[in-house]
Amino acid sequence: SLRRVAKDAGQFETWSAYQNCEEVDFANDLPDILRPHADEVFRLVRQLPLKCMDKKSKCYRNLVRNASPDFIDFLASAHASASELFSEDVAYDDEMRAVLDNLRTIFTAWKNAETMRKSSRKFSEAEYAMKVYSLVRTSAVERSVARLQHPICLPQPAPSHKLTPEAIRTLNAKIAKPDGLLFIPTVRLAELCESEQSPYKVLSRAIRRKSGTVGGESSFRYQSTLCAKLPDARVFEIAGVFWEDKKPSQDELHPAYRQNRMATAAALRQLHALNIRAPVFGVVWAEGKVRAHVDWWQVKGETGEVMIYSAAYSGPPTRKERRRSGAFHEWDLAKPGDIIRVFLLMRNLDRWMTGAFCDAVVAGVTDLASKVQLGYTIPPWRRSGDLARLVGRKVAAQQEAHGEGDTPAAEPVAEAPVPAKRKSKKRKPRTSS
Image (cartoon, rainbow, N blue to C red; front, side):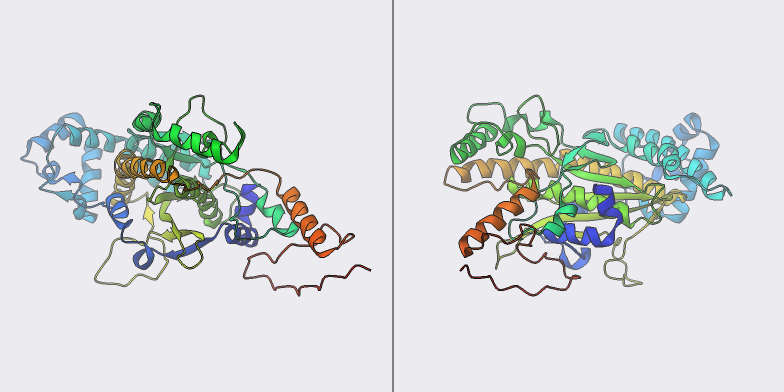
């Protein structure tokens, strides 16, 4: 299963090698063309009106009239420890009133996190999710479509790697169920699907002509959705944000990060197939703390292979200290400033989904529809078929080519692309008598 692969570092290494997944550095490796997306999502300063801290302002008087003294103290504590969250340039308008109203829910989540942190009892991740994480997430997500434990299709192993029977046990998983993910509302992508000459229908006809078949897993209807189950309507289903909560059975948060990366790899393979140049974001919640990562696809110029890169978000640049490469920045939800930052992060992700990310999807798919009319082929990305049978067919074909009628079918086709395993010596083919 996917969770079994994520829990075992060795199995995950095999899975990620066959998917061309690599961990890289956020500061040095994120392509310039994608950096504006990350800058927008991680812009967590100057987001709240400073007037709400000014006792002479209308904003402050409204807060005092409508909120509890404890909530006012919560904001004051956040201002004292994270003054960069506030700015005189932020207007106290209807949108900001709604944000401050949402912060009351964040205050409740913070109180719960603080109580759990001080308690001598050890709380499960399910309790953290119910009393803290969910309050933060639901308060922030308004424009995109959030789905919980929604099955998505994992990607097919990269075609450049030949399968081995040993690797198939790890690669056989077809479905992932992220704890949560954000989709672009289908109504936002309606322009891509409705008319006779819409990109969706142009691409569907192109694949049908190329394959010579109607329907089935090779059809564009399968490639256009990240979901494991086909939607009722012919639409694009595209996600850009994924999160995982550390499970009670997990001793450390690494398995949650690995599981999140398997989901983001699927999303990125879909984005590459649809010609969409945008990153996706992952958020990992564990023991009252939150980490984030940015993942993206990139084609290697010399080989044409599609690489899937993942970079831990290491926090805002600072002059005082140089962050260790690859180190995660961590937000502590028991701190007023940090829990507000995480709320703003999720709010930014929600708005990015229906803003810059949606724009990138429309532009990429529209351009793809033009390319296929000039002969471009859409690479299938979804995990399909029986990998064991695929290996058997390749072995049989190799035996036939070399005249090896009785070589056992379990013999590997090629070495697995896993650096940790020592390569076995290739056996010379036997000559038939």
